[in-house]
Length: 227
Image (cartoon, rainbow, N blue to C red):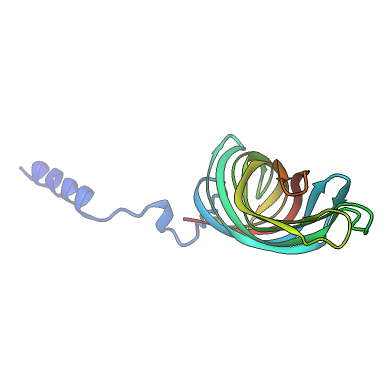
């Protein structure tokens, strides 16, 4: 009987007394796990160089400020990272200049173009080494473009104005590097080239036409927070 009671007491002690685990040991410090996994939101600041191609005049424009927001999702498989992201950017690029020399002996044609908004939807693939990741990215690009054409025949004749505002679509590609500050926060640098395609404008009053192509480059400092 005593043996049976002793056995019951041992069972009670085994199941009722809290057990100390390795994580409860104050002398054992668990290391944080750094990985590119999960959803994130982010912000970026940088500079943009936008090119307006309208032969015979090709203008690279000035270096302009750019900034915006992004959301995305990454998944890591044995140091290889696959992801998808979408971003939107405010771009202050504005270009105005003659396409044809506006002298009194030639038809006058002046183009004024603005890129107000710029957005991309891209996939990316990267390789992680400890807390660093290098990546390449490619996808779709869209931008809100405003264009005004002022055209007139030789001589002091009144101008004909053509105005157009629309979203243009094309592609974007680039690459960059990111560094994990913590298990949730990452900073990085990214380069993107984008092209919004071509469009031909015609001015019926003067019989003139011009083909416009808008492309550009951006360099960004990025911040991303995972949740």
